[in-house]
Image (tube, rainbow, N blue to C red):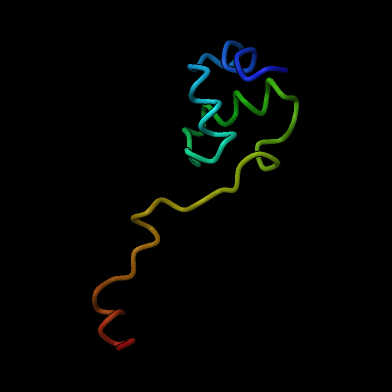
Length: 68
């Protein structure tokens, strides 16, 4: 399947798919990830690694002070 064909079936711009496949973009919404996986017929976890929101990854200042 071409990038354009995938983009058409998912409902995104072809450049979006190109940026994902080339590594210029590494994230997308869960909905788009699910659509891409559905169109390709694979589980989402095969295509994307789950990540915690950036706010969940922050270390509170109180913990940073103790680590120093």
